[in-house]
Length: 323
Image (cartoon, rainbow, N blue to C red; front, side, top):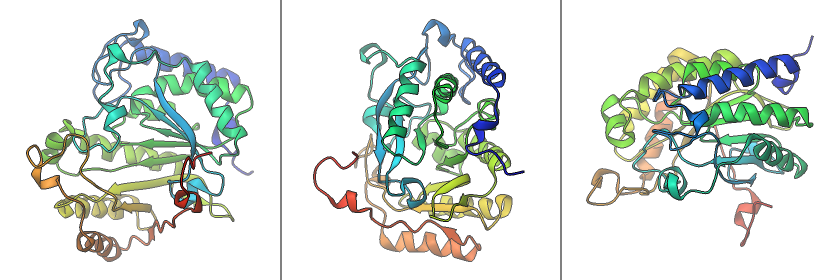
């Protein structure tokens, strides 16, 4: 019998309700992510992620800057969540991930509002719902999805994450998410501590990615080249950090296999808190030679499914391109 697609079509109303209840319970003594803060977010309290009862959406739109297999011809239905459970000093979305002060932020969006965003993106013809920076708001996402599915959502879900995820949250998403897209950032505890303020990032990222792979397997594409289900791992190659890249790619090849779909990204630029005083070693772009070496490492390890992205015509147009 063919597997239901999207995956959540196999979930009964009772199962959705069970997961919503489990998700809300997780918020009462927050353990939604590896920070394990323990605050009662149902009472609108917050800690590391600066997010209380409701998730705050900073923007949503059809995105044409994602991988070809996600954006297709109508775009990936991207929902950007504000705040983050990491403190990446080089974050290229620093203005929405860390700069927003909770006491000055607009009120969060209740699940009904986020469900409406998903349905609007579907009406615009998007190929999927792409949840960006979801690690700290998995319970709120499950609440919203339950409503959206009840009202006719039929697009696959992309979980676009830093990989700093808790296994408890990921297991609640089992059978809901079709495409996991973690960005495996650093291998070493030293750089994770210095650049992300999370020394335990590597161990949690490895465990999370293995759980994602257990759930959905290798990335599957349909006849038109669109992602249907599976794992797509991103890695932003950082200047002076090819040892991190090598360690991560070796782990992927060894633990997940050479058929793993990997996007090695070369678009690093100094952002966030990076400058010549704070992090001089990161205050430059990646060189062409460094990126070529990263590609060579992948080839040597037998990782043969590397993303080959082509510029989308809409990205070459002036003015608003996402509608």
